[in-house]
Image (cartoon, rainbow over all chains, first blue to last red; front, top):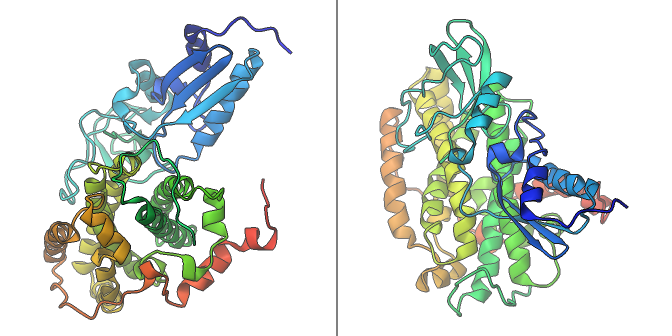
Length: 169
Length: 266
């Protein structure tokens, strides 16, 4: 058993910075904005997280990884709360997170372009910058991509198909 | 099935609601689970890869939504049953989903029309629930309505593509309308449980919901160049446990592992 320093909230936040999203490993869960709170009460650490999408299969993995990371520091007494409201929005994704996403080959969310009103059928696609050649001549292939949080785009200049992290607010 | 309710600290439901709330939340859960299962049957069989992925994505959203409802239902019931018990260990007559969502996939047009009829209801219902007085339903709806907006956009655009597409796509859409239209009304025909919840304001008035749904349907069908179908006999029953034969087959697959190896985990 590791002898741990008394947990402080600041210390727990720093440790959470080291837990990454299993589906987008360049992002920490703090970059994503899914950690909504940390509360230390004596020995007990309560971490509140919120899902990006309702069915996101990464949430169970993330909860496990938080436990493992804190256990490794000698903190076995961890409670994870799942909070649905207020609902997660891409506004909570950090600037650092957005830059890391693009460098990784996933176009970051373009703010203010959530699907908007659903009556806007066949509306103009969001102009998304190609993460490879940076051209904005791109088109939407499908609103539904490789995971629930991404849409599928293709660049009209370099022809690269790429994932776009959907704006969600 | 007992529906006694223990303390539910997270909600601000009027006192009369508890006995009605459990079966209603279960109805929402069953509806999302069964449609998620139907959509997931397309996985690997979609007409093109992108649409195969779209259906799998929508199925996943709905499965996540179903889990939130089942967890809440289990808490409301307070008998020690878990979300898994509710999904895997209830028989067809105990399921409360409307008949529409258990209908087989048929061809792509059939699946699209089923999805359109459901999404149009689902999206508009969630918009109301997210501002409703029940805190837990509002939280689930706030999350799910963002996803449901994508679903409705997707199914609406496909109704238009198929209706205003080729002779073949139009023929298939027309056939889907002839088969499925009778199941649409059940969504907005309140059961005794829903009526009781409407009376105390937990649920919105379905007549107002229907007005919004009809406006969207008219818009989409006009774009699709498809005449609005005449009203037909409304086939009801699923929400009160009287199902079509299809649900039993679906559940026998969905519940197979837990029925065969009770308590199995991995």
